[in-house]
Image 1: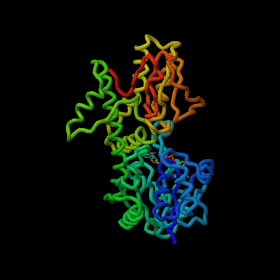
Image 2: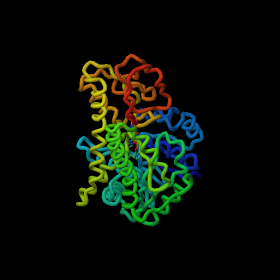
Image 3: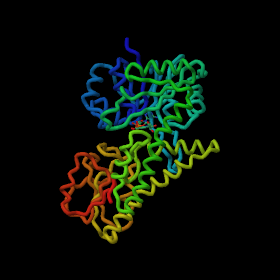
Image 4: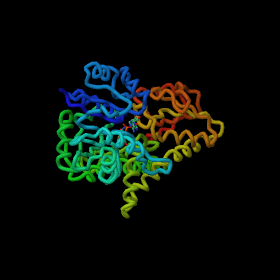
Length: 397
Ligand SMILES: NC(=O)c1ccc[n+]([C@@H]2O[C@H](COP(=O)([O-])OP(=O)(O)OC[C@H]3O[C@@H](n4cnc5c(N)ncnc54)[C@H](O)[C@@H]3O)[C@@H](O)[C@H]2O)c1
């Protein structure tokens, strides 16, 4: 008989993970509170680009995977994984409400010796100090009667090289037994699983990974402003520096970081650091520079056109990174808002996103005063712009 596992949250992280575990021989119950998404998945339609309809249908047909809207008292799984959002609230601070609610559901279904694995990004100490007490309360068990592990996800949407199976996975446990059990679970479908010394090490490692990206991208974005001022292309500088075979890693310019992780996770670290009395000033500065980038490009557009009032501007690519349709936390939203505030009439083209904020993607034509390349998807043909002036946020002189 197959080992049954539950995975709460069937989004960019939980759905690929569910299918990977199902392919490895587990019987996977995916749980998602979004009823529309659950029926979409159960009818074989993928809600994300990286997973095809065929992959979902094949797993459903084989009986290895199905999706439910909630965990009930009959739910009987050996392990429950939690992959729900951990965003920032309207105060730009960590919002754990989805996580708390998912942990409460998992707690109700938790059995003696059952394993809970948290994959959502969280602050150091959250598994031990927030999650374990909720599990104890909801299950009526004490922490030595169940197993708790933290294992940060490392999904990179649209990455064709690094998939679940070949991306090393970190795990940590409240106890050594929990860490070993989590390692055994993942080892069925991931080549390398490394155990961290403590839950807090694994939680902080995830925040370090994403803060490293935010700090470096913001640094390059700040430097790109300097390069533009002195008339050189930042990409030429990065490519020159990248010929050094050690001690340098290239990062490239943009309107800013976006998505569910890079703009969000560092704030989890900064807020924990502030609480501990050891502020992470690099992160705070990087966050500030990141949030200023859209306005920098509004001022560049203003300079190029000698004023934006009444000018027709086409923004090309609105998702947060090339070749994905995800618009969560996209910095292009602030770019468009800034252009409109300055009086420009803004249209956007993005045939991966198609519709967004009640507007639709328009074709690329030469009928605009300015085109701003925000997110250059591979499919985009810039030749259709003809002689339209172009502002390239990905690096220009
Ligand atoms: N997507 C990425 O590339 C990425 C990268 C790094 C970190 N993360 C982290 O992974 C976690 C999950 O992110 P994601 O991108 O998969 O999010 P997502 O929004 O794509 O998916 C989360 C899913 O959880 C569901 N959900 C929310 N609350 C629920 C509840 N209480 N019970 C059941 N379902 C619930 C939502 O309906 C949604 O379908 C977050 O902590 C995020 O920061 C994601």
